[in-house]
Length: 253
Ligand SMILES: NC(=O)c1ccc[n+]([C@@H]2O[C@H](COP(=O)([O-])OP(=O)(O)OC[C@H]3O[C@@H](n4cnc5c(N)ncnc54)[C@H](O)[C@@H]3O)[C@@H](O)[C@H]2O)c1
View 1 (cartoon, rainbow, N blue to C red):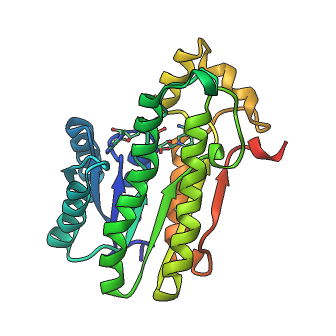
View 2: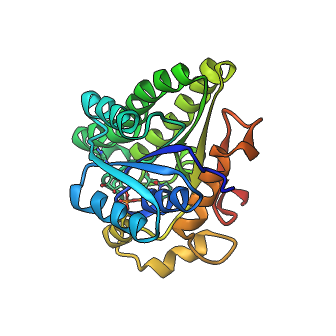
């Protein structure tokens, strides 16, 4: 029997990168997957990829900034598949990278904090009541090594990912006794479109980013997906309020 057979998994930002890889991995392990993404075409593409591989998935266009749309996404999971067992709150943006703190703009602050922090809070706000009704569940929020250390030129993104850890720890304290384990995943540089944009904005080649990691390369989306699946699985049954680092040694220096 596959690890997530009979389970319903929700992934926000599942239209690309880490979210898409995690949606595919959940489906491969037997879950029925609900994908919420702002970009309709990319979300539908992930669904097609899952169905082509023999899995079950459904898409609902969702902007994690809009409470009613997240509520509708959770409702969609329940009306389509009957329940909600696990959620990966992954949607996020990088915002403007480069300018030091005093040159950062209010517009960038609002945009990054809204998606990365409010989006995660709103996602849990609607996922948790559903899981409480069923007697349990597991949630993973996407933080970053940027949630653990500072990095010049990224003050707002760094603050947003630290906040995700704060939300995660507090949610774990509030709901673990009622059967919901809530953890975070903290990737370093992973090969996604976000990193393509980020490297371009910094006039760097992606290969230049290899040296950030003692392991000698940037990470693959599947390597983050495996960590998320483990945190959501029964194998992590005593793990809650934790931030799991997937960083090729970045934070060990
Ligand atoms: N790639 C990395 O190096 C890295 C490292 C650490 C953490 N992360 C985090 O991983 C997550 C996924 O990033 P990625 O690298 O796969 O980038 P990505 O740009 O490929 O994926 C982000 C996804 O989120 C979606 N999204 C953005 N805003 C949204 C909104 N308001 N509502 C719904 N969906 C929205 C996008 O459409 C996209 O599909 C983000 O939270 C990011 O901060 C990435």
